[in-house]
Amino acid sequence: MTEPAEGRVARRQRRNRDALIAAARDIMTEKGVEGATMLEIAERADMGAGTVYNYFRSKDDLAIAVLETLMHDLALRIEQVTNTFEDPAQVYAFGIRTVLDTATGDVRWAQMLNRSEVIADAMFHRMGPFAIRDLRLASQAGRFEVSNAELVWRLTTHALIGASLAITTGQLPASASDQIIVRLLCMTGIGANAAVELAARPRPALSPEPAYRGA
Amino acid sequence: MTEPAEGRVARRQRRNRDALIAAARDIMTEKGVEGATMLEIAERADMGAGTVYNYFRSKDDLAIAVLETLMHDLALRIEQVTNTFEDPAQVYAFGIRTVLDTATGDVRWAQMLNRSEVIADAMFHRMGPFAIRDLRLASQAGRFEVSNAELVWRLTTHALIGASLAITTGQLPASASDQIIVRLLCMTGIGANAAVELAARPRPALSPEPAYRGA
DNA sequence: GCCAAAAATGAACGTTCGTCAAGTTTGATG
DNA sequence: CATCAAACTTGACGAACGTTCATTTTTGGC
Image 1 (cartoon, rainbow over the protein chains, first blue to last red):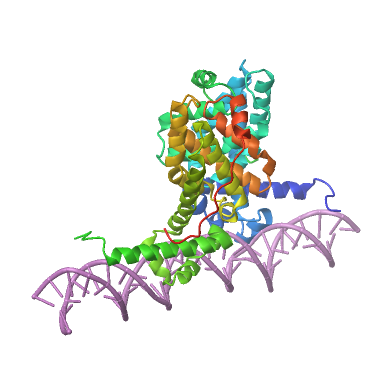
Image 2: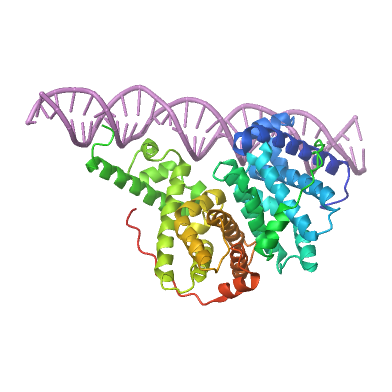
């Protein structure tokens, strides 16, 4: 059969896969995606260079997997803070604000921003379940006017990554963050005034990032 | 002296530069940006491989120059149609709608979309003077509520390119175009209802693209 | 303990971008 | 017109990359 059972083999393969992602994440953090070579990644994961291709079809595939771990972790940490909020619109606002701050402040994100379409796509899929849920909740509560939450989230991810790139490359000042969030909130159909108010609310701190222990 | 006069040398250099852009545009149209090699481009422009680097610092520089010619041409053709419009908000709406249709329908654009950040940046700079002017005119007329037109345009370019990429890769249906334009118009601070109305107005056809004759 | 099948290996391959020393053209000057 | 320095062109070249593949090693059911 093609899938007899989830046995020891599958577990070992998952461990190797995770080791590769961890190694790639470390090296790509130091040298950027293009600067990281497949040979170096394989060596840090204690494998031959060819073995990597048993787990990832290409270098791009591996880079995407790395990004997805970063994003999933961030989404969970955001949720830890926002699940005490009263206003569902504020939950969404806090989320995109935190993503913007992380993308521009965290070196590991900043060095990957020049692969915009890959990052935006990963963000759409990995953080989408959280963001789209929040958009829908806020719409049901009458705070937002979003008929197609997926579409709004898709546009928001690209604009968010683009804005982050503009900030890290100095084309936009970091002080533009507030205005960026206001305009992204405008896409939810909320009025400009309400968006300004929403973006100005105090934001509690995120919990620190836990150490990576694989998947 | 460094710049004695605009003589024959400068003219020949511009001809060479234009020939390079034209050659690169052709080959990148056929094979995409990554598929085009510097050697092939140089040969089609009748130069040695090394000569290209006298005109463009890198392959990226050349790709950007190609994009900029496409965008400038499109901006002029849009202007030809919209300068008869009464409503300044409609001018902007027609512009972004046309860009979206072109980016998803024209093969030459579609094949370059996977370099999102480069395309978006070129669009920001080359079409920005037109778009930002339109945003300001519509704001002054009380149709939009935009305090920072540059920022809105920056976010719009990235969202627009991202949406185009999603459509060409099949992640979004082409029928989502209307909703995309509505949400991009929302970023101008106009209400959701007004955005829907604006996006639904009839759009006259664009004049056909003139043949490329260099610069 | 045996064996077929799956996984790992790392050297080799084909391409790539960008560089460089050598040769050629240019145009102002005497 | 002859001269010459500066600017330009050239194409072979280097270094490095992602990926492949024949070979070896490991695996796990019998």
